[in-house]
Structure formats: structure tokens, C-alpha cells
Image (cartoon, rainbow, N blue to C red; front, side, top):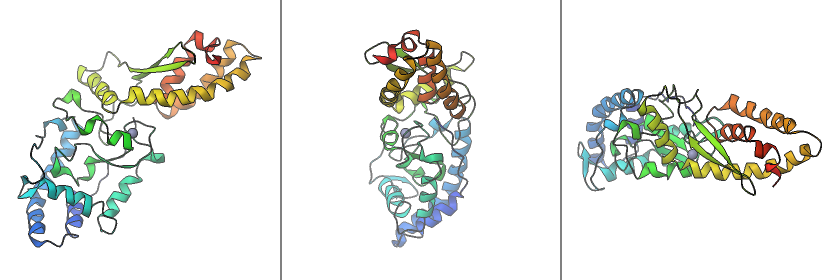
Amino acid sequence: MRVLTQPLYDPLEVLTECISGISDHALVAKFQAFAPSHLVQAAEYVDKAHSANLYKFPSFQGGKADVVTFGVTKGEFYSLYAQYFVGKNKTARVYYDALMVSAPNQKCPYCGFGHVYTLDHYLPKAKFPQFSTLIVNLVPACRDCNEGGKRTSTAALAAEQPLHPYFDRAPFYKVQWLFARVVESTPASVEFYVSCPLSWSAEQQKRVRAHFKAFNLKKRYAVEAAEELSTLSPRLKTYHLHDSIDEIRKQLNETLAIERAKHQNSWMTAMYAALINNDWYCGGGFAL
Ligand SMILES: [Zn+2]
């Protein structure tokens, strides 16, 4: 889970740029009629996002041929995004390209390890088509996070909302809530889980659990960890030949310190903390 700087492009400018690519005059007229409302809703989106109230926007239940607002159908909002925002020869593509490179090291902010592959609609366009081209609703994300559970289920309560990389800040990033425990198996493995500080509100605690679940992080982190453990095992075996359990812990601690300084809630930080605290692993479990 990583934060991203909120993009500050003018929503009207982006919409106008998208509309400029459309040749159907009747459709242009509908989008132009929609534009003032878009500006109002964009401001409302930012307000709600800052106070974790995005779930209060009513979701659209209609099909592609149904009108969402100002005569614009859901299918037309889809096309506005797919053809006139993402389209490679369209002028609005510049915003798409800017967002795609905005995540540091091209890492997906939802999971923290996948590489950016697409733009994810935080409020899915199937349920909120009017936000199809709203920049602050577009998050650079990896394929797995984009295609995960958030796409099919919409938060009906504040507590069901995953973290929004542009808006959610304290207390989610500075305090550790992602942990791991060692499974004393052959070979060793780790299991990830969420444990929040008791000082957090029930809603905050439920939100990180919702995030963990929506992006299938328990399973996906375990897969990453298995790879790391298989690399770590031969390295630790060489220390084990000559040194004590303390030396093994010292080696693990060096990696933990680096990872924790980068991200408090990464699977690497959680995994290395768990390994260090496990006597079975440090005492030779790593070599099995
Ligand atoms: Zn991801």
C-alpha cells in the first residue's frame, strides 16, 4: 500500500480535451451540457474522498444503452474513456500517459509490488460511468489489482472502502497493520494477516481489512514470499555453517531495517519481522 500525489489537472480541461476528439455533433452537445455538472461532481468527489465518504455516491444500475445523466448513456461514457481518453492518437491521451508514469518505480499503489499496467477506476466505471474520465478517480494499478474484487463489488458502507492512494493518509501508512506469521513447514512458508492498533476506529480497522480482501493480498503476498524464502534459504545456510542464531537474526535484521524504512506495510517488512521473531526458523527452519 503506497500513497500517490493527488493529480491536480482541471477536470473541465480534461473533459473538454476528450470531447474535442468526437466528431458526432449531437454527442458533443450532450457532453457539453454535462460539463458544468461534471465540474461540480468533481469537487464533490474530492470532498468525499478526503472524508472517506465516496461510498455515498449512488451507483448506476442501468445497462450500456441507458442514460446516466444529461442524455449521455453508460455506453457513451465508456467510449469517452476508451476512445477519447485512452485512444493513442487523441489529444487527451497525454493525461493517460502522465498518470501511467506517476507511480514511483512503476509500482502499483494498491498492492505495493505489482507493476503498473493500466488505470484503475477507483469507483468502477460500470457503476459510476459519470466518473469515467475524472482524473482523481483514475489510479495507476497492476493488472491483478485492476481485475480484482473491487471491480465486481461496490462499497455500500464507509468501512467497506479500500484505501484510496490519492486521498487516504494517516493513520494507514505510518503504523504497521500488515503482519506475517511463520508456518513451520518444509520448506518454511509465511502467512499474512491484518492486525490494527486498538486506538484505530472500527471503520479504519475494517477499511484496511477490506483493502486486504479486495485485492486478494493474503494469497498474492504468500506467493511473493515463497519466492523470497527460496532465495533466502541458501544464503542463510552459508552463515549457518559458521555462525550462531544471532548472526542469522543480524542478517535478517539488516534487510528488515531497509524494508521498514521504505514501507511500513509491505509484505517484505511483514515477512522479515516474522522471520526474525521465529526461533524455529532462525534456529535452522530456514534450511529445511
Ligand atoms: Zn497491484
